[in-house]
Length: 296
Length: 293
Image (tube, rainbow over all chains, first blue to last red):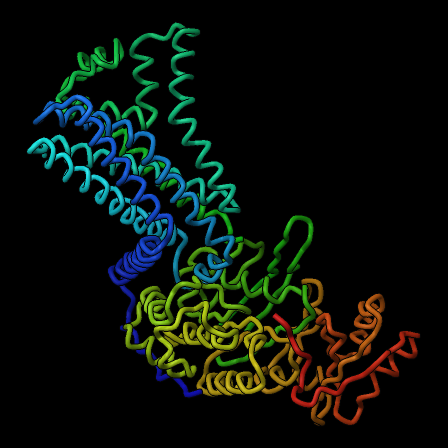
């Protein structure tokens, strides 16, 4: 073996250089995570599943009623909304749940942390990489669905559709953040995936039923029910999409009517902020917990 | 280069490392010596700051717990077994680590060439032999030309030729002024590379000594493999270690390092303790106990 020539790094490590290397480390992890997950089977499976379901929903929504133009689009968007609420959290939670726990089980985490990186770089970098993959997967599904819509109805409400996609991306980021938090606290990916599924079930089914039951039992006021409903990111997403499709929240009953009347135009921003908080807070918690927790 | 004070790491109630203190100056070379479970790997992980521990450790004056990223930028680490994504190609793996260490990608190709892996860039990590993985880990460790190299049994997966090459590379690194901290089961490596030896037993420092004090012979060392009944292997290993022999238990008998002209010594030692040796092999092609991964 030969001897490697000495490496001459720039002298004097300024804080700017340090910050650049911090960002560079995150970018390295994000690139690698994106490349690995794009090539993985789960990405293929989720993309195909979401794409097929999105196209199926679009077809069924249109062909069943024979609608045309934007009326048809509205019906399709409502179908897509229900599909997104079910499928996207499942995709994001399971993808996030496997990220750190998987590295830990394979024994690769310890070697990565032995490099000149901080734990926050690992968590944030991997989160960004997975987020990129999820966005690609969603864009493919929505893109194909938009093609079907344009073909069948002769046009797509671009603004409303773009808002649906944007809020779906926000929902995916929020659920990915929760999944990453689960991954940090779990030793094994199987446990992390199990916890992810439990959270998914809770958000999709149990929280609605729980809210209904507690509103009856505790005789909650309408503003309290609204406050509790908004805490669920899935409900926040649903309301945000309905508001942005220029539809009335009255379809959601007295709570929706109360929200429309009380918050008016700011409701959309409020719901978007809720989703952003769901994307940021669990990720921050994951970063803090991972920094405190050892690699083993 | 390294200052560690009362480093303690417990897994549950078991102390893998207990109150270990050490000093390692720039350009020095320190070997961690001890049987399996002595705490060598855990101590290296503590010094790298990748696992939580009690006590204090500084690398180049930088606290590994408070400024771990900065401290680890001074270290190239070679694990016992390279754990990396099996699907990754060598080229992209090197580019990834070059990115983490803030070195140009061209440097990655140079490092691969240094360890004899040039031309293998398109190969996937899973297709590499154990020895090639070890050389890849060494290439990654050398990427940023760090002043300190930490190695955890760096030749454990290598054949005799590969082992010689790695030892020669490490010797060159030592000559060029690098500080080395390495765990090893092999007396020849320790004798040829280490200035000092830290003997660990059940997580505690038994001796801080030199290779010549540990093996006070100028005569070449050879390995004999003793075949005993399974039940007596642990007792035999303990007796031989107490008698000052370097012993390795690997499931295929006991490998014992002995001076070339004293090969019967371990048999006599065991006979005195009424432990029967069924067979003996002299391992011609190795000079140390074989260490299985």
